[in-house]
Length: 143
Image 1 (spheres, rainbow, N blue to C red):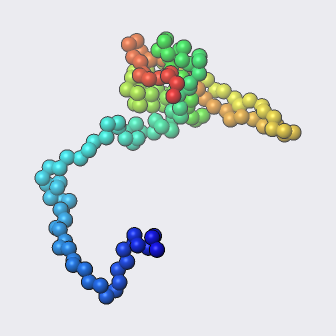
Image 2: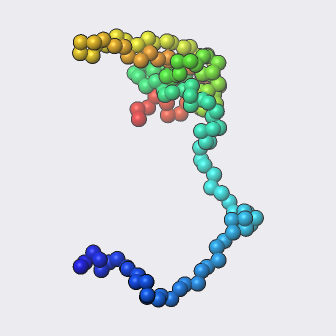
Image 3: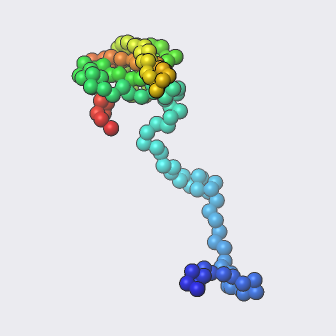
């Protein structure tokens, strides 16, 4: 039987030579010796605070891509977010200085689902203007 030949069954009566256990290294000894830890290349999510709750996603559209030339960047933000919160979040996440924030409330559109009607979700957009000389790298490029 081919499959059972590959498995190593130990019978209870068989004796096999036991290997001597190698001493395990103590974790405290490694720390005392100055073992280096691998540091992450990006700051962890906690370093940006609650910015990930405010900035939901970048607003990718043809118009928002054209606005990047005028130092204006579009973000879809939480419906409860206000201008100072958006400003702090963008400055913390992208390490830039924000000059001005404009907010646009977009109400949901009426849609038909067969015989019944419904609405799409309302959302809020923030148009962030950066100071002269500032820019966000990689923004506006398709993913």
